[in-house]
Length: 124
Image 1 (tube, rainbow, N blue to C red):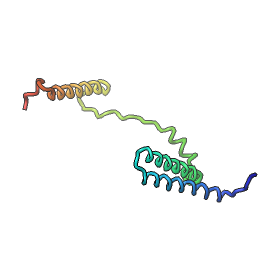
Image 2: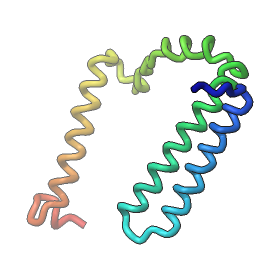
Image 3: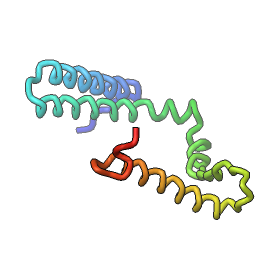
Image 4: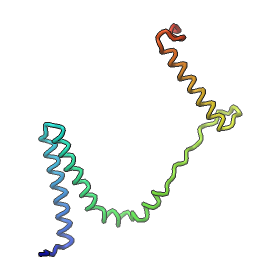
């Protein structure tokens, strides 16, 4: 037995389910004593948020033209910029290796100073 339902009634039913999920989740979290009960309330709120996204997707798709935006987001690439050149006449590849060695030696010197009885422990 199929009952015909209009699109408007269907949207109202979806919105009512979202509101019921938000209210139920909030009440469960509000009165819960244990963390497990609060987690169940969080699941209710999460399900309501997903329902809200499903409800709002057609509007968002029409408003922001997501079919046009999403392919361009997928083609984005990150291109790291080279570090600053210190002007010492080194090539950038060699400079990066030297810089890494220099910072590594600085870290090891600092660790040596922090060790009890290390060579720099008596320095002021």
